[in-house]
Image 1 (cartoon, rainbow, N blue to C red):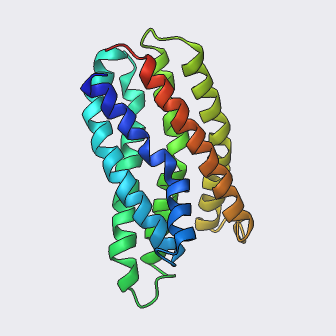
Image 2: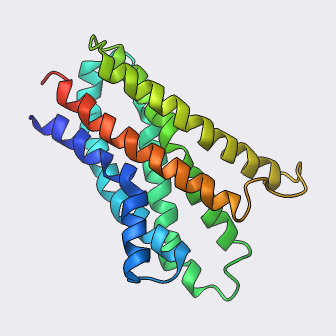
Length: 202
């Protein structure tokens, strides 16, 4: 496998945030849920961001609609930046549950929820590169289904932030359940992503 496709493969690390987060919590390595999730996204997001940026040149050569892959780069960079602030800034705040702590947390969550929709755009881009096969189609379908969960949660967050809704629909414990469902979806997307990369030409 050439360097560009290897970089695309490494990009999928961030899609496995749920098992990485689960391991941290089960082992008790970190007890704070927000800190653990921030640390996971910071580590995986940083690696995935660097790898994906390195692979963008390959996408430009491979697909005429390569620009559809740019939203994923933005989501990775934004999510990694928010995770860095969540790990370094929020623990130092006297009241983490108010501004700017809530802004950092909500922005990071939004970036995480954008992984599935942005992946869908990437798969659409790859399908326009001449590699129309069942794997890419299946990956796009799964991403679209997972995106339904993320879009619903993003809309809920937006309505609550704009005071258009009295309270969030996906609050505790439904919110955690939806995130677990979304995490399982992104994990499956990551596996399909790896299968897609293996079929791409050098």
